[in-house]
Amino acid sequence: MGVPLIAGMCIMVLYNLVDTFFIGLLHDDYQLAAVNLGYPVMMISVAVSNMIGTGTASLIARSLGAGAREKAEHALTSGMVLTAVNGLIVTLAGLLFLPQIVSGLGADADTFTYTSQYTEVLLGGSIVIMGSYTLGTLLRSEGSVKYAVAGMLCGTAANVVLDPLFIFGFGMQVRGAAVATVLGNAVSTGVSLLLYARGKTLLQPHWKYRVPTKEVLGEIFYVGLPASLETLLTTAAYIVNNNLAAHYSALHVTATGLAQKIMTLGTYVYQGFASGTQPLMGYNYGAKNYRRMLSVLRAGLLIVSGTELCIMAVYAVFAPQLIGIFTETPEVIRLGSRALRTVMWILPFVGAVSMSRMSFQAMGKPLSAFVITLVRQLFLYVPLLLILDRCFGFSGMLWAQPVTEAVMTVFAVRLLVRTIRGAMREAESA
Image (cartoon, rainbow, N blue to C red; front, side, top):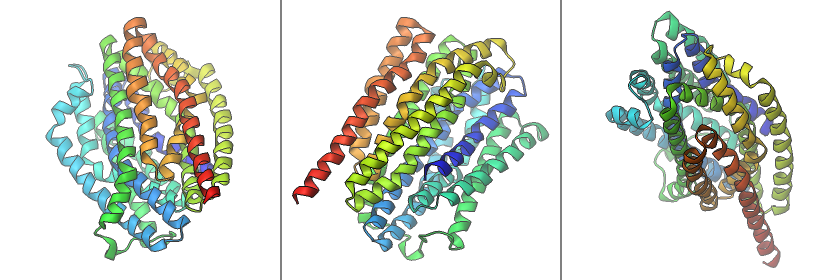
């Protein structure tokens, strides 16, 4: 479940990396900074779609584990309808408050116009961005990982082709990068819908389920709302990070943004394994096979930790070369290498945190998953970000995330193991 998903997620990260690469060819660090500043808008779309996708995927996995196929298909149809509605809401609200959003992202006089151009297009395409993410999650929830990857692959291929066309061919520059991203997501969404329409999937949406019942809505939002809040908290922390970097210079924003984007190739490995274990954990929890859940958890932790250490070694050795792919500015390369070689220390720890959080969502225990994110982002990362930045400057700001993840690994894994063992004791005594 994990390996194909990781491949698909690494393909998906190319959306933003391809935008960054082609914008870098313009040799304009302000436009590069605008892409970094506008990235949280994409994250907000993911947060809203995560509310539906994660909640629906958890309900589908648990329903299939319990043998309730009809309920699973009802959840699938409801998830699709809710995604379309939420996409329209995000577009309308985002475009209405565009200037305020751009200012809040940390844009200054040099980057405001470019950031506005980039975010305006992304907000206009929210429905297909959210559709691409949600449909991929729903396909994975029934075990159709190859179809989820196919959608992402087609979307990324379209983005790679369209980026130079809109950026250079039509002279749209940073706005063109956003247009290509939206169209790429539209292709991904279309492929996923086509797979459902042709009956290639295990589950099928049905017109009779187009109006969600209170029961299905309650179960989707019970799991999905905390998951959405988790992503929103992560986005808020990203915005705080960008605003702190902007106090130093636009080059610092560009450098930290490039380091974070390169880091996504490493972080998607642990996210892929965590998402790959989610259906397994949910299915076995529905079937009350708790010993298998512990086996999946142990195997996942060993695999993801070993893999991330290898990725970390690559980042340590080749940081300047990796940053240099996107910019020729010596100062950005120096700052970006420094940022990458610091932030990479999250990799040995963060996989365990993500796997624990995903497992709680799969088990239908969203509050426990939310507690992990709440402690991680609100009580540890953001305070450490502000304190270490004030005490140690730019270096302190960079070290806030590795320190947070090291502490959270112990907290999250202990909480998950205690929950599973508690369920085992209840089952044995029943």
